[in-house]
Each structure stands twice: as structure tokens, then as C-alpha cells.
Length: 133
Image 1 (cartoon, rainbow, N blue to C red):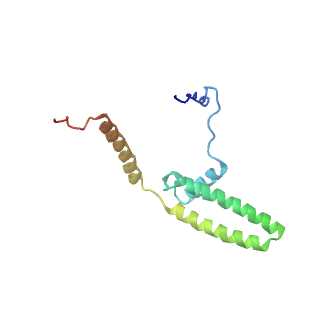
Image 2: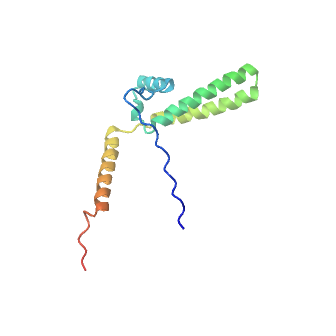
Image 3: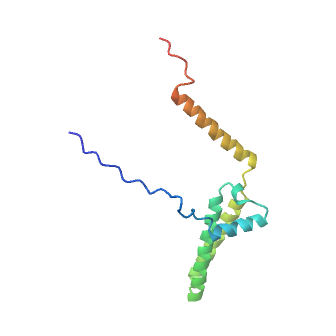
């Protein structure tokens, strides 16, 4: 006997014409873009732009946590957070310097387009010679 077939779950509702637009960049991303623009760097030209934004979020959270620990007088916690903040700042500095050249990004885009096209042609059998018996 075959197991009963379960019906598919209903799909997520689709956005209608009157739906609000998707959310834009948050305050951290806007601040990071401005800071990098002051240095002459575009956030989108970095090798991993979301890593830079997320490290900034983590840094903000650790600084806030450190401020609370200072107010409570937790010297050991403040020292530990200071070390963590230094580590995050070093990671952030390194990630902010990894800029991908425009031509290299173009190479990757074209490479993916060509590989996709070649994969489609190969899977359809367009490049295989006829079978010889």
C-alpha cells in the first residue's frame, strides 16, 4: 500500500498592488554608507558589504553593553567587553579594506551567466554528438 499523499501547504500570500514597499536600509546601514563614503569607498564595492554592516551592529551592541556594565560598576565585565570591542574593530577594519575591483565583479557576473547558459545547453543535449552505434 502506498502512503497517503499530503496536500501541499498553502503558499505565502503575494504582495498586492497596494502593499507597502519592502523596508529600506536601516539606520546602521545608512551610517556605515556615510562613514565609508567619507573615506571614498562605496559599501557595494566591498567584498562582503553585509559583513561590514553586521560587524557595525555587533560593535554598537557591545558598546551599549559596555556602557551598562560601567554604570553598574562591573570592572571585570567592562575589561572583557573592551577586549571584545577591540577584536571586532580589527575585523571591521580588515573587512572595510577588502574592496572588489569593478572589472573583477564584471568577470564574476559574466562567468555565472556563461556557466548557466552552458549548463542549460548541456542538460538539453545540444552539445553532445549523436550516438554512434
